[in-house]
Image (cartoon, rainbow, N blue to C red; front, top):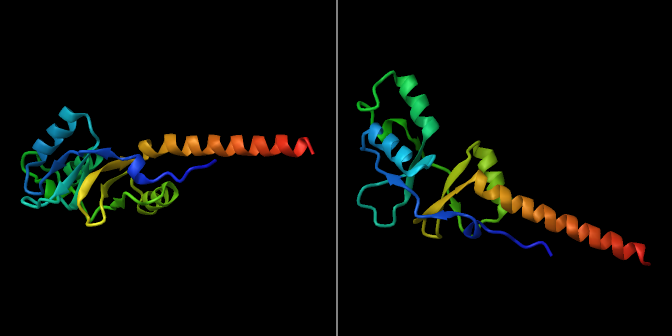
Length: 151
């Protein structure tokens, strides 16, 4: 039977975060040291860590080239993508893929019903779930074909 996979089943908890006033060089170093592709930007002093932006390794490269400035002269807030797509834990797999596709992004912060940051989900996290659902569907189709052949 095909199960209803939700984002709560797929996201990575405890995402790496940064603040908008931090030097971009520090954020780039954190990405490298932690072997992650994105930082969730939160407001300093916000205990729920509501996402206000996202900064990817690609944003850093593009932002530095576009601005023509040294990483030590830029802040995270100058380069980050503000108002990131956020996904709630109760969102289904298909809806999450649709939301990522609509915004043309590969990663999104995951939040609870109050908007508090819980984790991050990437397209790479969703692909195995899609493959599993397709395998379940194929199995179901095979079982039905076998049942019809016995009639």
